[in-house]
Length: 74
Image 1 (cartoon, rainbow, N blue to C red):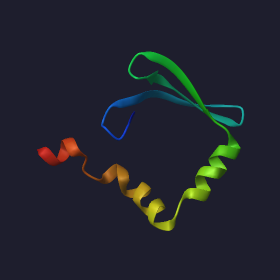
Image 2 (image 1 turned 180 degrees about the horizontal axis):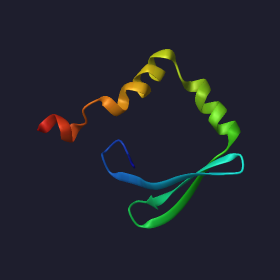
Image 3 (image 1 turned 60 degrees about the vertical axis):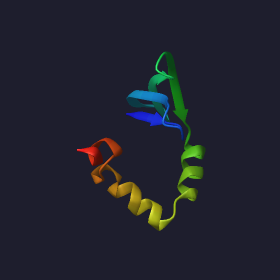
Image 4 (image 1 turned 30 degrees about the vertical axis):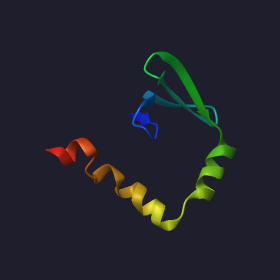
């Protein structure tokens, strides 16, 4: 999975997601070269959930089934 900035540049490639205790650990490379481990703590996950609206939850559930920019060109 890749995460991009607003200009379309690659910020991080996530190659593995695993649980470590009560945290979620995302392993990958930042900017395509620097190895990085990002940790999501329970309090940050709760803060994220507070940001969600019903419309955004619906969008997130349907996101994997939508066409991306590369799919739309074909």
